[in-house]
Length: 290
Ligand code: BT5
Image (cartoon, rainbow, N blue to C red; front, top):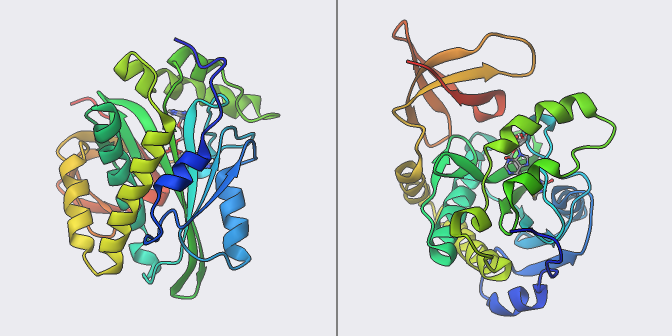
């Protein structure tokens, strides 16, 4: 099982399958190679791009995760997409977009690959505890308003774990690169899960259709429906977790994840009985020993 020799994305097929009466996927911008789809989508958004445009690529030279981390994907192996949105939401509710995207990934994977996924707070989609997909939302704010937001989604499709581990990490940053290899050993892909290649086009079409439906729910004031579906898929609630507050060498907070509210904050019951509300921008989560 290898990603060598995989064909480029048939983006015309994706474009043709997306009907005109939608928001997400209204326009598709395909690049065979780029730095990061989030970079391109942010630049388009800054230049006034209407919402719904999706930037997709087959290869990123500087794919990003949160907190300056790297996202790796061998060429032609993955779904790498960023959606420009202009939501009428206060910045405190931006996590709802990440939730909508995570639900769309989970449902697209169920539909196209018949695989059961779970969501790890705040933004990972896992299969049997292994990371299949990640979401990176970035936004420009003006005071209390969101000017634009870009929701970047990466899904490991036709790639094996050894190939992910062997993928070049960010150039010129070997120390951070090494620290980022260990989590890749806990990654998975649809190739690994299904034992055969999965159509990236079918997955991307289902993903964009699902994201469009969820985004419409948010626009029509039905954030509760998105949150409810997300909550049902989330495997973090009820588990013991260790949360490191980053950046900086502050000690981890350990407790039981008790709830996630509509702002996407995790309610952590610490061992002294206090309930702390943690914002997803500040933490990384690991399972904790009992
Ligand atoms: C994420 O960050 O999970 C968000 C990833 C978003 C990637 C998409 S791809 C399209 C768009 N353009 C971009 O440049 N980014 C978005 P975070 O939770 O910080 O996870 C990053 C960590 O996951 C890294 O430190 C690695 O350890 C690990 N990782 C990197 N690549 C991975 C992969 N392909 N599969 C699983 N884990 C990976």
